[in-house]
Amino acid sequence: MTDERTRYGDDELQEFKRLILSKIEKAEKDLSILRESFSNDSNNGTDDTSPTFKAFEEGSDTMNKEANAQLAIRQEKFIRDLKNALIRIENKTYGICRVTGKLIRKERLMMVPHATLSIEAKSGKV
Image: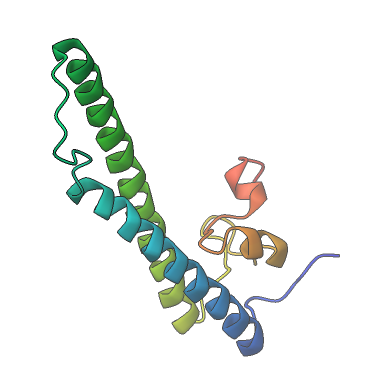
């Protein structure tokens, strides 16, 4: 079944808005946890006297911090994309593919609520 509408109705937009707001809330909590991991020093005052062990531990800490930094950057982008989706809801342009100008399928938006491309546009089948 092809949806020939040009935009989603107000009820559907409110449904998407609730979904997006809940995703933003969860994403911000996750981001807060990631940020806390930067500020918490895992050293509890029990310095190990073995220099080799300490070097491995510090290398591991550095890798963990770098991985957390990458996760935090991705999480910030996700939150920004979700907030941009809220703006599109307010403008009543939410769910419209930026390539084809057609409605993005509701099932896709429920899974990826910040999507701006239909599956066809994303896969280059336009």
